Length: 390
Image (cartoon, rainbow, N blue to C red; front, side, top):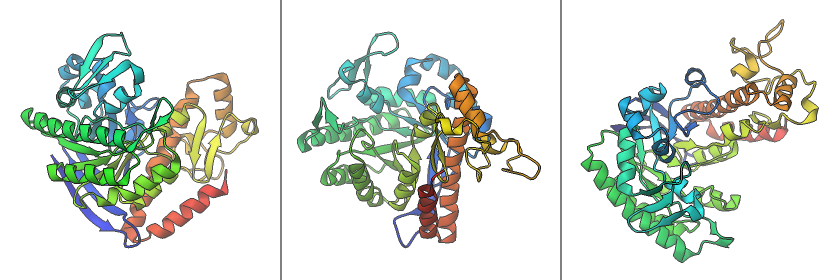
């Protein structure tokens, strides 16, 4: 089940405010979705995800198929009970992971043959098998199996001809996914994925044919795959607002805080990216006033929190009050610097809590600005604050 209600639009851009109802709950859009590759968002307790306002998270079809395997997940009745997350889940199709295997995989019309990165077993993933896996996972949003068109292969930029062949293969696979999804009587929602590389006219062809297939929602794939930033922005500006207005739009694998605000202005409703969690594990923190690298020596004695305006547990403690009179409960930059230098696991845990909280609060602010008809002013303040520096 999926219903999408368009609540308001921004007259100065393509931005919109919506409400997405799925089998496991309601999602207010625009939204950022934390990535939980193996059935967990790395370094974060599910309770913390609830507390920071996560509405929907991702699971990874490919990796969950490898480990723990479908028999284990099926014995729990699906991914929600297995990982104890009872809000909505979106699962990717496995296409991106297959793409990332490089020389370890061979693509044909039927599907993809590859060696398991876990034990070397010879495996075969097809559109039908992807639908079968995601049906067992019982994710609220299922992604079609597609070929993620690379920006370049072996140092050579993908040609228009190569991008067309890849895009057309993904369209044929989309039809097979739709047929298998219906055969399985999956009660959830299947999204189609727009491909076409860095070529606008190919994106338009992909989009048109997917719209004719009448998916419940649509994603823009094949960006943030190594292309220059200006190309990613160009395709993001071109594609989302051309998708049906009455259905949700998802920009896959993007990105920085600036990318999210830009994407919203281009008509995107849903985002995911490993950046807030992956960067946290490398001591890279996002704040209202720019990015902070906590391993730098200048933080060794700094008593300030990561962000003085942030109410996450890392910055303000369990009270949620930053810099309260008479002290505060949050952790100092000096302490986080110390933990990083010592390799203590608490460092990436606190950093991950902060980064995800920042991303989710950014989207809360975006939704509030859209509700108030003030997105332009919000975006201007956002960019000015980020440019100020920490």
